[in-house]
Length: 84
Image 1 (tube, rainbow, N blue to C red):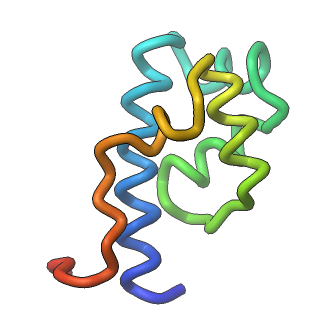
Image 2: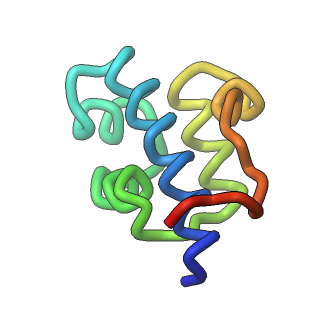
């Protein structure tokens, strides 16, 4: 995985975890009650260990009860200027 890809995934991971923790007591509660994803998959995404599919983004946003654009809001996705 490219360094720049990892940075973008880390930005998304931080946003996802923050939004999930606002609505659910635990990762397991979120996974088992609200999404079509396993807790292991969500954990890998929240730890920026996997580059996931677009359909996974849709499943996550649906499980959170928000639109994909709300999930991606305020994330700087520019690939230039990252500090490593």
